[in-house]
Amino acid sequence: MIKTKISLQTKTQSFTHYDAIKHQYRGNIIDKPIALILILILLPCFLLNITLAITTRRNLFSKKYKTDALSRKVTLHRFSCGLWVKTAVLFDICLGKISFCGIPLTHRLSPDMQFYVLNQIKCKTGIFSLYDLHLKTGITVMTPEQLLEQQLNGNLANYLALMSKSFISIIIYGQKIKRLKESKYLSLFGLDVKNTSMAEAVEWITCSDIPKSKTKIGFFINAHSINLSISNPTFFNQLTKADALFADGSGMRLAAKKAGFLLNGNNNGTDMLPHLCKKCVESSQSLFFFGAKPGIADQAANELSAQFPGLNIAGTEHGYRGTESTQKIITTINKSDCDILLIAMGSPIQEQWLLEHRDQLRCKTALAVGGLFDFYSGSISRSPMWLREIGMEWIWRLMQEPREKFNRYVIGNPLFLYRTFLLGSVNTGVK
Ligand code: UDP
Image (cartoon, rainbow, N blue to C red; front, side):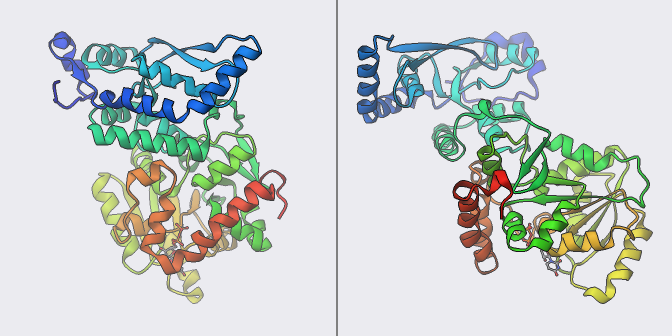
């Protein structure tokens, strides 16, 4: 087994001597024992499915033909009737036709990448992949190639971790993504939510041919904002006045799923900021950071300027000056001639502030972004990727600020789920 790191970024240099090396994707060795254990655990279910098939005179299995990211044809087995019919794929894994984790079935790599991977890396198709995991949770921080590269470079522990995360994500989000409807706008809890991918959201924020006096406003709504909007009708009305509401977090993903829709992306401000900065550099647009404790917005601006050369942060202002300084702050923002204003004072203060003062603002777009500057200044650390991959970033935030976030998460999350799944408020908008 050759343990050289796989790099899909430098693939073209390796084309000429591809047959000299063949990387082995580690992890596949545990496929068969794990599949056997699962078959033993699921034996009662399998016996039921077999009995049902015999008594109804049906074939035991049906076949599903699929094509993986490398354009390879794969045949997957399912029970033709009974419970958990897809678990018959465990037999395919036992026979070595497919892996638990491997090349994804959900998208196609570009032809040159397919050629490279096929000839350089020994890897079967997988029912799970890092790409699928990110697709399911709506994380859009890495390209499909980067995800594949990271997955293929993983060791046995990473393989097991990917399997576990994929199982958990199936339990949380279910498997039937394809049956969900796609729509540009969703009505969730009585609010019109823009169903954009991260790229489309950034495009909306940065693309504006209207004058700066007609500032368009975008809010990110999550389980917490929905709970607030239900207990506070004024806040609900304020949310309806935004030009765009972006769905943020796994709670909104679950709510959209309950309403029968697929969310195109997890449009949270924290993941979006690097994409936004990149776009601002490309299109020569400037940002203004307003909010958070003294010094935090400055620090975030310095960090981002170092990370994105050419980024123009036209000014910063902290969020604890009090209402008497509001006019002064508006003058500072307008004098900076910024294109995009990011305001980080937490919900509902930030949304209220923006709507109250939108007519006085002179910038193309203004967004309410919560604790964004705390993350980018480094004063609060972002949750590890494995927690984000299973949609549980809130656990990290709760651990960091247990007192401040207790109500929001420990009380708020179960309440949100109760409203979504038991009260059915998600479809009707009933409060
Ligand atoms: N904040 C502020 N002024 C205030 C109250 C809060 O600038 O009067 C800041 C606070 O320092 C923090 C942010 O607003 O940086 C709120 O973060 P929170 O965690 O509530 O936001 P989330 O991302 O969860 O919406």
